[in-house]
Image 1 (cartoon, rainbow, N blue to C red):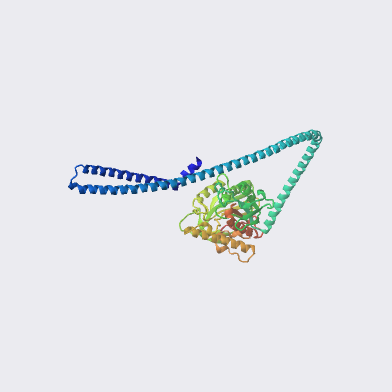
Image 2 (cartoon, one colour; image 1 turned 120 degrees about the vertical axis):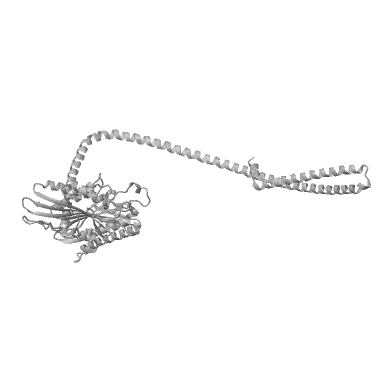
Length: 553
C-alpha cells in the first residue's frame, strides 16, 4: 500500500497517464464520429439504389467514394487507437515496476528499522539495569554512612560535653582580645589619617577625593555598560585603601589610582561631607578655601555639589555648617557673611544675581586678593536667606541639552562666601573666602556630537579646563610664572589655586566600560593635581586694633 502510494504520487508519471487517457478519449470520439458518417452514407446509398436514375448515378458514385474515404480514415484512427493503447500498456508496465521497486525498498527499510529499534531497546534495558544496580549501591553506601555518623555522634557527645564550656570560654576570650585589637587598629588608622592630613597641611598639597557614581537603572541592561572601576570592597584585596582600579577594555589594561579619599557607588552624601567638613571651619578661621568638582558630563558632579531635596550635597551642607559654627561661636565672635553667585559661560563672567543686560565683569586685584569688579554681593544672616537667593540665581544658569547628558550644565558655576570675623575679647579679626565650584563637563569634542553654538560652548569649556591643567602643571613643577590669566576660570580662582589657600578637588567618574576613556582622562588629571604643593596655607588675620583690608574682595 505504502509503495503504491509512493508511485502514484510521482508527478511525472501522473502527467503521462493523464496524457494517454486524453489521447484515448480523443481517438474514440473520432472513431464514433466516423462510424456515424459511414452509417449515414450507407443509408443514402441504399435510398439512391431504389429507383435510381441516370441523373443520380453520379451522386451514387460520389457517395461511394466518400464512404471509401471514411473507411480509410476509420482504419487510420483504429491504428492510432492501437498505438496509444500499446503506449499506455508500456507506461503501465513501467509504472508497475516502479511501484514494485518502491514497495520492496519500503519493506527493506521497515525490516532494518525494526531491527535497529530492537537493538536500541536492548541497550536501554542493559543501561537501565546498570543504573539501578549503581543506585542500589549508593543507597547502601548512604545507609552505611548514616549509621557511621550516628555511631560517631553517640561516641563524640560525651567528649563534646566535656570540652564545650572550656571551648566557649576560649572563644569568648579571643573575641574580647580581637575587639581590643580592633579598637586599637581604629585608633591607629585615625592617627595615621590625622598625621597624613597634617603633612598635607604643611606641604599645602591640593587634596583630591574621587567619587564614582552608581549605575543608573536604564544603564544596567545596555551593551557596553559593564563595570570598569573597582574598589577593595568589590572583592579586590589587591586594591589598597583609598585606591581604585580602572579597566580599559579597549587596550586590555588596568591602572591603579591613589587619592586622599575615595568613595564608591554606594557612598552617601553624609560620608562625603564628613571628609569635607574640616575645611568649613578653616573659612571662619581666616583661610581661603576652594572646593571644586571635576569630571565628564553625567559623572555626578552636580549631585555631589548640590544634591537633591532628599540628599543634600556639599554646597547646602557647607553653607548650613557655616551658620551653625557662627552660632556656636556667638559668645566670643561676631561674623558678617556675604554671598555671590557667578557663572563662566563662553569665557564671559555672568552675575547670576544681577542680570542687567550689557553688564561686563572683569577680574581685578585688590588688597584681599582677586575679586570680580561689580559682582553683586548680598549680606546674609542665615542659611535660609542663602537658600532663597541661591534659588533665584539657579533659574538664570545657562543650561542646554546635548547627546552626552540630557541636562548637562554648559557653564562653570561658582558660589562664593566671604566671611569676616571679629574676636570681641581680643579685638582680633579674620577674613576668609570660600569658593564652591561645579565645573562644566570635561568630555572630548568627539563625544559630545555638538555643532553650532553647542560646539562653541564645548570648545570654550575645554579651553578653560585646559588652562586649569596648565596652571596645575606649572604649580606642580614650581615654575616661576603660572598662567592664571589664560582663562576667566583660572583668573577667578587664582587665590584658591595659589599659595594662600586650602584646595580640595573632587574628581567624579562613571563606572561604565564605555566611559573608561573619559574616566581615565579625568583620573589622570586628578592624579597630577594631587602632586601640586602650594605651600602651607596662610591665615588672613590681624591682631586687636587692626583689621584686614575690606575695600576690595
